[in-house]
Amino acid sequence: QVRLVESGGGSVETGGSLRLSCRIYGYDRSGYCTGWFRQAPGKEREGVVAVSTSSSRTYYSDSVKGRFTISRDNAQNTVSLQMNNLEPEDTAMYYCVAARRDCTFYSFWGAWTNYNYWGQGTQVTVSS
Image 1 (cartoon, rainbow, N blue to C red):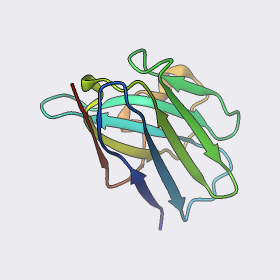
Image 2: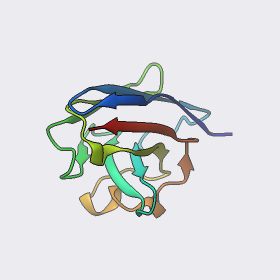
Image 3: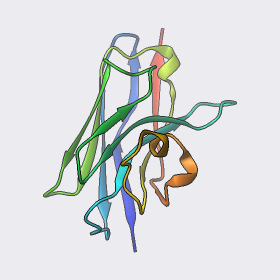
Image 4: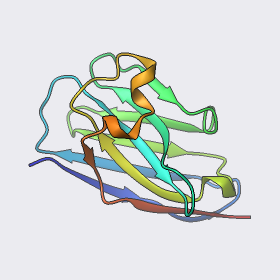
């Protein structure tokens, strides 16, 4: 059984930093896409960042590029998201995700329907 267990999140002021981590249990596929989505109240789910576990190619939404960084620890099967220079617009529930397929093409990573496994979510709140 595949489980994604998130940690991190919390509340910070504008300009602050947070780090989210996600450990993936029970998933030993050699190449797949994993990353983070977020959803704010009243808004649609939004792809934040993803990484291909086979090529290490990363994909970022324009709204977080240059501020967020995704990283992987293959030994621990963990994916982390370092979020710097946070803005109130970053306030949302953040979800760790994993797909059965790899994100070889750009068009794959940002569609939430492509991801088969989701964590329980962790709240990030940025105050102005």
